[in-house]
Length: 366
Image (cartoon, rainbow, N blue to C red; front, top):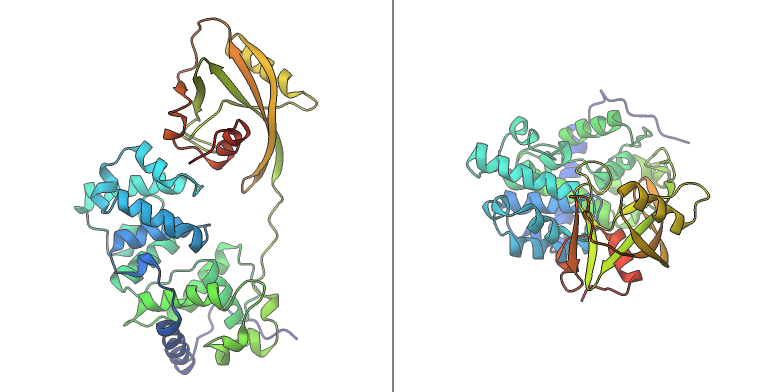
């Protein structure tokens, strides 16, 4: 039997609130992981880590975080770096709009706030790429502000803790959980509390196999009390990715390879890659390239298919075919294209889908 649903107006008693605070923080003090962004309360380091951790696992982030901070140890260093340097340091983490927004935002901090990350919610929320979660994380962890930081882990913990059957994909559910966290978060250890809830979700209150017998706040958990913890959270299933067939062009002249900078908007915006064309239904890969060459006004001899692979983005799946060709005459190329030698090819930053194409052609990172 499902427990009674909690309304958005329901109050958490002081006894329950204090009990959750005390038991959770006691557990966190002994069980928290030793992570590089927890070494101090530098808002810049915390900001970088939180942006990296969006949609990326902790174990994956750690080496990227350490490398990024070694290149850009301060907010000022990142603000003064070029777009190419910043994107290259991010290469492999994906979702590149995150780092471009971060780069823009730190420049805003330098220009408008004297290089000091804002300490108030309205100001920090105006920065590029800083949403409610990131703002709450920075303000609570760096400045100990009692502001909720609700990510996927926190939503999972609180839907189970208070037996919420609301769809966590809805904005209204996130706001409800923010209201609940706001009632529980302690003023004296706000940052630790937010991190403790996240840690609980990552280590104990996991998506498919919650370790309820080890949970420090089991005594307050409605989901556990009613044996419905595995039914929560409720989330509407996402639509499956759309399948798209594309041809990637491996165009060479001598020891040079042609690469393309993608448009500033859309999928993989502003990233380097190979010229890529969407295949029409029933069209063979060589015919796709021949059609594209005609549209571009270029002449080249097509030497054939070199390999195929799949790559899944969040909303689409590319069925990719690499086709090689060689231009036969001197001609002009689109301004977004550039010839580079094989030795310099990997000096530029590429999303994983194009790194896979390079592997097809026998070019691998050292």
